Image (cartoon, rainbow, N blue to C red; front, side, top):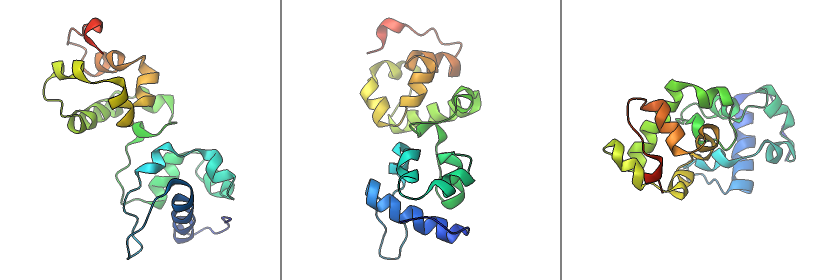
Length: 156
């Protein structure tokens, strides 16, 4: 497999094949990709080693930019990528959006519900990069909820 075409159609075909081979991303009978979430854990080296250097370089090495261009119908959550820019992770709007998404997926109804969430649950939800960038969950929450008196000892 080697990428050599400019069109989005060819880029998509290349990534569909690569996604299937490397990450087990499958397509429905109509050729529609069912679940793209495995791309959040993708590495640039996986793409480059399979002939996709030109494709990734076209998007300045950004997995987010590449996937957003090739799969615009998918709602990408920048904070879920294993590797993403520090500036994006420090952006308060993006951070608030990430916490809102996490709140929904982890059934957080009240701020105190965050105390019951484990690091493993957060990692499984795709928040590992956020936790690293902010020194853990309490660091993330202090940015998003600055008026809340978070008690570090209460976190698991």
